[in-house]
Image (cartoon, rainbow, N blue to C red; front, side):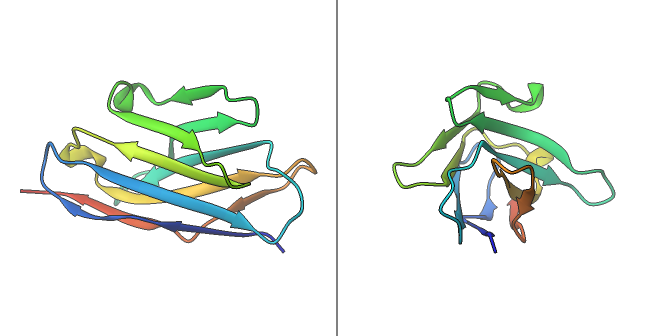
Length: 116
């Protein structure tokens, strides 16, 4: 059973930075893609950034130029460097992992709060 675990959330002032980490364990397979989604209170979950096993990335327009998604050297690890954070970046951030056999696994989420 694949387990996805996020870490690195917290509270930060506007303009600050945070780095989120994610690990997908419990499988011998490398993921086809991994990504970060977020959900603000009262809103739908939305894509933040995604990276494929080939290194292709895509970002939500709202985070382009501020956030950077990357894969770690260890298998099935993922990072999200978030700079110039804004209040509207507040929410629960979820990591997802797309397996080569067609299933997607989600983590429990890590909270990011941007407030002065």
